[in-house]
Image (spheres, rainbow, N blue to C red):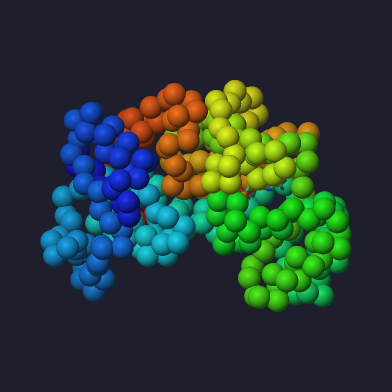
Length: 301
Ligand code: ADP
């Protein structure tokens, strides 16, 4: 097969591993800078050009779309879908999972466990919003944040009010969430491919920190997950329509709760922690599933 990897960084670990794994399995690959794809929307025959040449002979694409380019990246993936090219994650699913509120609403609708979470727009509603999630301590999150930036633990009601007011004052969207103290600064990343969790790692925050993101100094180790955690992770990926997903779970004393769904999950941490060749499993999944015009949401997204 000829597989395109949509990625802004050919030297990034995840990109390199996918190239390596696809080559090892006998496929031809090309890393394509998503932002250098340009498209002709007007014709009956959708096309994509890249550095002056048409991209017209791929069987499959693996989108690795960074959060900062979701809008353009989803359009590029959609154009591939319109051309009949199989995408391991569909454009609609990518856009859906990048909208944190929409994701949580979709997960809630499927009865998937979530931390109690509130969302408001106006300062007058802050006191009741805080009540809604059970009071302090609570976590305030910027909707546009990634890698733990803009995730703030407010230990008292007063602190929560000030933080929320400050965010409203600069006109950014936030959500307010119950603090899962019993997780002890740890969460579990489940790497889902199709209907299986193929690898899992536990991330532990450094002492004095509650955010376990590796970018915030968290450390990773292989995780043994329970059947309930496995079911929750697979159900979350399915609810979002993602074939490949990183599902972040937090262990609460009322079971696993989904913190986040990632449509371009990194391979470095999970492969190192688990020792599993996740890249090859992604490629195998493509081999089993890629068919021309297989995309269910072709052009409708
Ligand atoms: P980001 O998308 O920026 O990584 P997350 O919502 O995943 O933001 O939060 C970052 C980290 O903070 C999580 O990995 C987890 O360790 C911790 N965390 C997030 N929400 C909660 C919560 N409600 N209770 C306890 N810890 C949390």
